[in-house]
Each structure stands twice: as C-alpha cells, then as structure tokens.
Length: 126
Image (cartoon, rainbow, N blue to C red):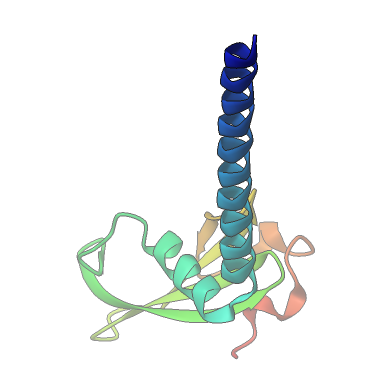
C-alpha cells in the first residue's frame, strides 16, 4: 500500500509541476502581448508590415515607391506609398486593427466611402 501511495503522490506532483510550468508560460505570453500592444514603435512596425503585405520590391503597378508611416488613431492607421520620382500622387493605404491584426481596408487617393467611419483627423498630415 505505501508503494501505491508514493507512486500516486509522484504522479500528482508531476501533474502539478506541469500545470505550474504551463501557467508560467502563458503569463509570459500575456506580458509579451501587452508590451507589444502598448509599445507605439512596435505598433508602427506592425502597421507598416501589413501595408506592404507581400510587396518586398517597393513597387506598385511598376512605380517604385517609399512606404511612409502616416498616423495611427485608435484602431485605424494610414500609410502613404510615395512615388520615388513623383510620377503620380501618393497612394494612401488605410488599415484597421481587427482581432489584434492590422488589415488593409482601402487604398487610393480619396475615400468618400470611409467618411464618418474612420477618425476625422486620420487624413490630416501628421
């Protein structure tokens, strides 16, 4: 009987240690996630990455551009794709944070459909 109790005690101790380790791991993930959400520079990097998408060539429709962070207001942000040789007006990319991820919701030079949906100061120059 004492051998069974010792085995059972060992199992309980192992399970307790595993649960403790997993709890610690999730607390670390939570702290990292809070830091990322509260750090404005990290937010800017996430916004820029979402605006670029898979475009690593810095080219849109054959025109070389520089992506320039514009502004973030709450769950909305704007990034400008400015042509290097001024061939055309800058393209504005509007993003919205949805479930913790930045998503492009529109791009262009004018946004009448978004009027009243995004903060009014988003389009003003920072």
